[in-house]
Length: 268
Ligand SMILES: [Zn+2]
Ligand SMILES: [Zn+2]
Image 1 (cartoon, rainbow, N blue to C red):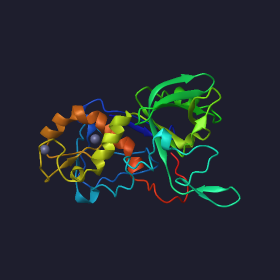
Image 2: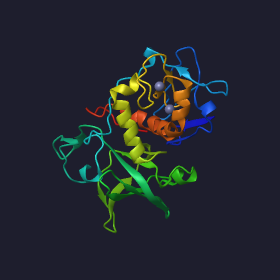
Image 3: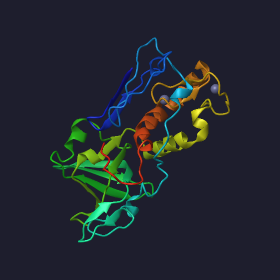
Image 4: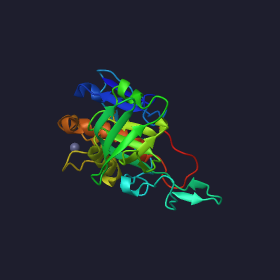
């Protein structure tokens, strides 16, 4: 099994080549270790299949919800550059403003080009396609070099401001890549993973449709969210769960952050 959630490269990459290696059996309270938003440490090995679900491992409180349109605005609702916006900023006299809350834009990568710098065309949930162009030291090329940007993936941009480019197209001008992450799943999957985490049934019932078992559940060691009452149900679910598993891991960072009151900026 290769599950490499690389924080430093700001992208999740993982492959779960076989069912047998996709789950880990541990009898203790295997604890997830976080070393950044995208790092997950786990046991691995062919002999390992499941983590026994224990009540102490129930999901931590969900703080973020992608359905929150203020925290996760479409492009049209993101603040403009050089324009007062009381939804996201507090005025501090003399023209200075401070963020009053956090926000993050999500768009699905429709296309990308490298012409001296990386430029991504991304579609938000309203269907609008906007441009995200990189003006950091590396001009966004790290995402290309590491093969991280792909059509169909989702790009997340923290604190973006609407920008008019010289050719009058609109989008975001990225100067700090620590505010950008590319997630290896579609925006639709990311959002459905979010919804699933917020579904109260997801943290105590077998995830097989129409199975209502709540006892002796086994937990997927990939996402540490999916629960199954038996090997049979887990095996049957794996084909559908595999892409969902990635999306659940990708969305977790966003659901564990407080998107309300602003103290210091989030970074990937
Ligand atoms: Zn079941
Ligand atoms: Zn999973």
